[in-house]
Image 1: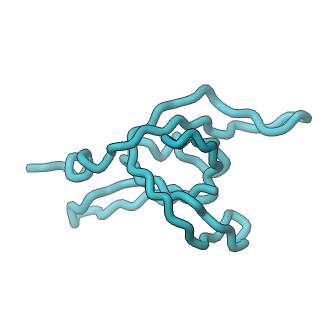
Image 2 (image 1 turned 120 degrees about the vertical axis):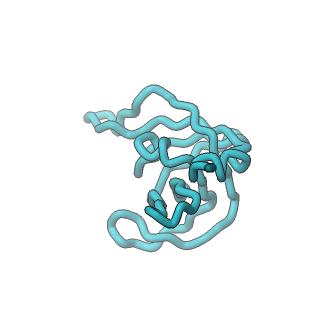
Length: 110
């Protein structure tokens, strides 16, 4: 039997570097050490809502294994394969439960 994680493994053709936001000081936000995440990067402009409900333009969407959910958090800095650094606007962990469909994380970036 194939696990849901294995169903999408062939799609994780990109690698990004993520520094999760872990607080702030008087000098601004602070971030964790960089982590590498295998994913699929889709450069496509779309409107999303941020944590405050405001409409924001997302330039890129990442799709990654559910194990990356702790790393792909709102406010994290993501270095894309192009070298562009983007900020995560919103994330969603998509799980199918007993349907046995591919579970994954989706993150909308600036």
